[in-house]
Length: 151
Image 1 (tube, rainbow, N blue to C red):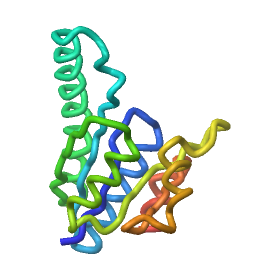
Image 2: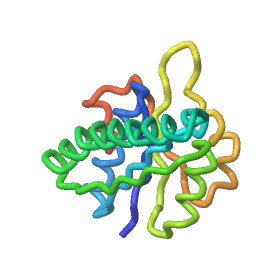
Image 3: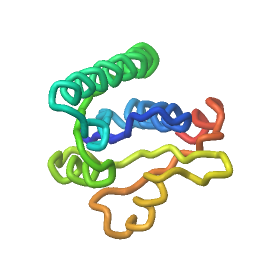
Image 4: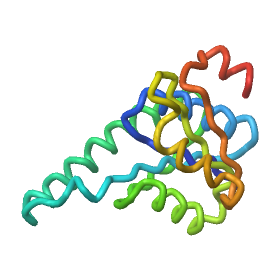
């Protein structure tokens, strides 16, 4: 089964990427894998404090994931898979794609503000020609109706 890999973060555009991945997976008989990456700099503290912070980050990710997962199950009939990795985001995304041969498409949301599309879109689009899977960039300003029309 082909999976749509979508990155879970705290950005506003993440919502559209999640919606797009779930709608496309539902229409094509695919699945959704949600990847959350915990940056390494979050844990450069004393060992005990770093472990506690890592656990709190995982709990926040799991709670955030459950909101998206419930919507995907209820509205799209998709039961997404959560993967949590630690490291630099781009490296972890590429490593996840390399290690899961079922991933067929990487879906990212692009920011709609003056800061640009966001660091992941910027970095990964520069190397899009050498990515092992297609990259789909979903505009963060696209409405739900617009998403439904595209999917």
